[in-house]
Length: 278
Image 1 (cartoon, rainbow, N blue to C red):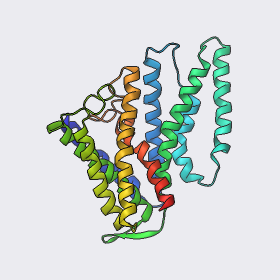
Image 2 (image 1 turned 90 degrees about the vertical axis):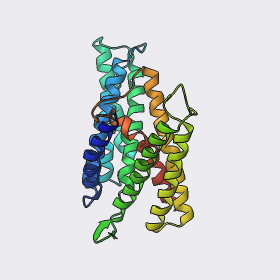
Image 3 (image 1 turned 135 degrees about the horizontal axis):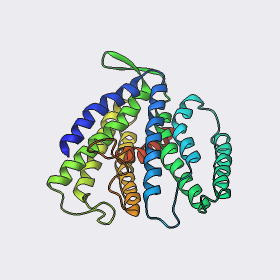
Image 4 (image 1 turned 90 degrees about the horizontal axis):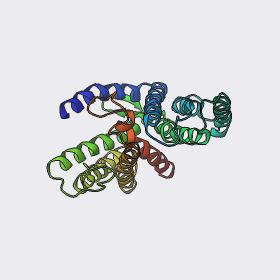
């Protein structure tokens, strides 16, 4: 399992870095939309296969619209969300009405509800990564000139990746006390603390290098350390509710997109909100 995790990271991290540092942010927005699309498919398949009563088929119109949100956030940054979502909801309602009319489903409200949740949880939260990337002012990274927004996104991923790595090894080798047995039996308090410490350290050092005050940078790392792990626990709770270990298998050793980016979905909105106040 560890070998698969490392191999997947060795392939995935360089691809993500290319998307982050590509000038203009368009490739990053497209990449997050593709990730949101795969995550939405995982979400839909999981809930369609679950033994829920009544059976649930999350509305595909809403999920597809959610997957488009990250790229649309980059492409049309000034468009109000209401102007986008109003026709989407109309299309979703007509889709469910048509299926009910043909006698294929009766759980219209459930499909709309799960579709709305999936759209917001996956697509909308992914779009905050695009908002973090929106600072196009040039700065230096060693001998290269890069856009500042790319460094902010890299800072976030560094906190998440290093914190997750610390939690994995500390929890595996010295973890004893479970943090949430019913939700995620493998997670320990020791791993949680190790993750939090790494996030605070990288948040403080990286944020100071980016020009934030040490106090504000430490607050950013603390928030990422807490909310990133809460995002992980939240996604685990979703899986336990439908009786699956992972939402997907597209990332060997990690599971699916939702399994790998659950921390990002909670921490990116936090860092964007924090950035507006800093």
